[in-house]
Image (tube, rainbow, N blue to C red; front, top):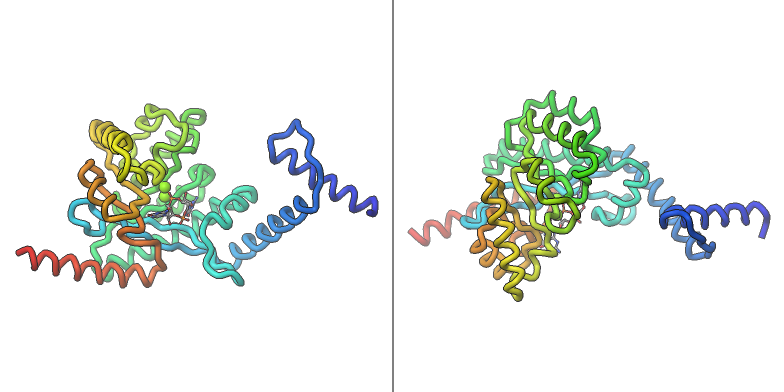
Length: 301
Ligand code: C2E
Ligand code: MG
Ligand code: MG
């Protein structure tokens, strides 16, 4: 192997050692090289897609636990990969994070979501709220605040979902200040994947979120496991004390729907009720759902 290749390979091992937390030895392997190549290619493709405007959103309805009416929609980032088609966040989020471009993807998703929100209003679908996922990086993006200030949002019509894993304890001042500015603009704050991060419950409550979204890892086992049901009941109890709404995500069966409703969750989101779908499908879905709801009401009357 040429000296030049030797240096390149050594570099690949060096980066792997850094990636795994530094202060360690990593050996070069062909496997490592291939993986690096894939990451590099994917990274280039992500940057190109940002330039080409190839990031969009899918929309997953959320349902009132009691009436099963649609009471909101979560926008989820999707990559329209030129060859591989629609890709979920698992295919790009980590690499986008390393490239520091998640805030840009968030910005695209927000733009798409706001456009759809106005379409839903125009079509009188009764969907008055959309939520988007916000990375920590995006929370401190000056462009975000100035763009939002121009928009003149109806208070409560847009929610930002913050991952519980965003460190609220360490950077609490900066985070709290940012969140306060958002709230002044009428944006509701939700804590995503609640119950899986390490944030203290006190630091979360200090943010006075509008809603907690209970992670699907906690939601999944409620059907078979009474202890898990009590856990959800306790979270509902705490939330109620502080006037915070509860969303259950990962609601996969109708049995989950009944149990979670009876445990006091306000809003349900999951495959049992609807999967994430493209913008046009969401409009069709919402129309059909409304017709079905009306028919059920008529039958009961
Ligand atoms: P999340 O915000 O917790 O979103 C819920 C994820 O669960 C979505 O995956 C959704 O498709 C999936 N899901 C919904 N119902 C069910 C169910 O019943 N069962 C199961 N097993 N899964 C269900 P998706 O779209 O792949 O998104 C994954 C994660 O990527 C999101 O989790 C969120 O953390 C992140 N993400 C998505 N869009 C964005 C974005 O625009 N910006 C940022 N920063 N992160 C995003
Ligand atoms: Mg979310
Ligand atoms: Mg979640």
